[in-house]
Image 1 (cartoon, rainbow, N blue to C red):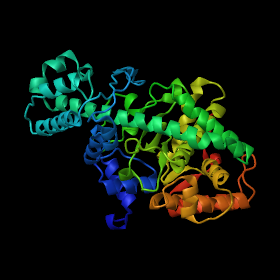
Image 2 (spheres, one colour):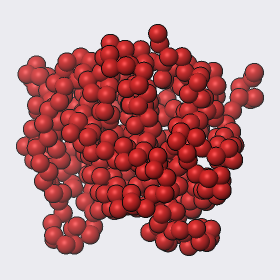
Image 3 (cartoon, rainbow, N blue to C red):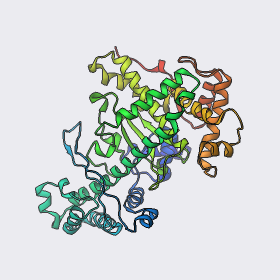
Image 4 (cartoon, rainbow, N blue to C red):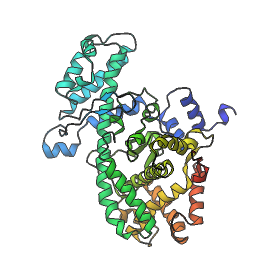
Length: 438
């Protein structure tokens, strides 16, 4: 096959295999075709870090101060692979200008250092350490590194810059976790008594309990589970695997999903090989709406299914956990097909979205704007409108076929999901395709 005959996703995949960076469009094509998410480019990271450092204007008007709220101390964690201590420093209360000055200064120093010029980053590190945005930043450096700040080489300049970025992304991810926790309590918890199907209600309860349990996980934030820094174009989860399931089968990490890395109507993702739930960030002070809570619930369901598989097939023997995990992800990682997931699991995950919607809206109008208003979702959001439309179409097949009964789903509902993924050019395997280890 010539390059001209290959799809955008195939060309992006080949670039990844050769260690090349992807453009934003190529990242989206890769996710669309293979379900593989790549970390944002340096340009994408720059925009996101600046958003984190900026103060929301409404907060400024209310408080009369151009600064962020001081957060509580964040405990250090340990990399489960290397045993290395991970230094975690929360965002401090500072004027925006200081944070942006430090960020742009470290970025420029790193860029200049790649030309072989030593850089003086002493004042930038001193400012960050004493004024913010990350007070105590020098804890990230060894005594030897501290001695070389006035004559930093590329390695040291890059270390300081990328650790600064990591701390920013960790802060952003923590805000996602807080926002989703609130959204699940607000939008999903009250609907549990109204869920029609007992099996669906139990599945939702299991997923919600998993989220609550994971709040006690010290490395629930992907940027706080390893201090190793991925290079541009590398996927932090794939590059630095952390076998959380060996420590606690209920634990997983949360990361950031960006529109640059996925189609705009994708609300989240679950990276089964790395046990990372990817969720979208929100602007400061914006809450997660009903549909965004459902997207989080969908990915939580997949995490719960993964746990269920490990629990069932490890048969209580911790020594079997890794073999069972490898069997579970084998087709996703190794198959030449564009394997997105498991058909039976998608049926359950979408049922867990459909039933809360109908519990809220009833079986009335299928007019999308009206349904969105009843769900409290912005009716002018075209991406969310497309997702609501798909969910309502699935709901028709699901309820017409008699809903879920045990582990069985209506045939027309299964067919609708298969056709949906076929149009996305991805493949779903079945549970029977997984080779259970002896």
